[in-house]
Length: 405
Image (cartoon, rainbow, N blue to C red; front, side):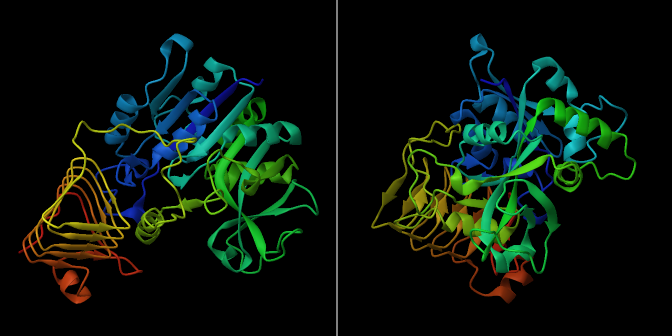
């Protein structure tokens, strides 16, 4: 068995998720009521048996560092760990210049562990994946790097970085950045491979690539933009078809689910994927659990003819004579009599007043919605009150944002 070190890139600023990232790093953004985005990547690695994990952080990392330190405690007796690693200026007086530079500046992690294989995952996607199957495919290919690719419709290729392979081969021939006319796959002409941002490297190959990249003044020092294309040019890169990955407990409906929740609309849509009777992504798969820490709170409570349908309501929340439909309600939320919440994501410690209406919205933590206030009903009224509205019409309020009565 190869010795494996896992590195999770969690330094993303998450500008497109504003205002949810005003006060936190993107991987620390809450998701699904109980989780943080980073819990999905970490759970995939730990469930796969990779128990030495370094999480590289940078922007607004306090809540992320705290979450990792308090939640992801591994057995020190066995030498296992999940540890946050902040930018330390080990290679000079500058912070991380890109995802590749983040690993280069943290080369001490590699030198200390001396791994055979290095798994590099992003920290802000929602999916299940057995990373050990990708490592096995990497060793079988014998390439320097293996890139995870997910099949997407060819007509959507312009939204992604596309992997073009050699004919009937896993060898990557070219990386295409948001092409308008991408070639289809040999076994499925109407599909293309989009890069998932997950990589498996032979350790020596990655170290050499990082050192060359660091010496190039014209590089952006980015994994997907610089390191991988150079390895493709050398013929040293292969693709791993995410569809091959079989995770215990998944169904045909959700086995190859993967979402980049980098925008407000995609974040909102990913939550709606959770709440149907037959969800597109099933949080209740106990054979491949998503781990996190849970607050010490009583169970959710429904009183005075309260109604909740197709929704997730987390611990400590009370729905009192109100209606909740197609929504995700975080912890310690109070929804008062006569209120109506539809197709919304409500984060922790929110109070929704009597007869208030919240539709097609995201409310960050510690918000108080006054009695009778309507959000997501009249876009012009929402804009007049200073609320942000996404391209898809989702109203989003930042942490603790005040709402006029």
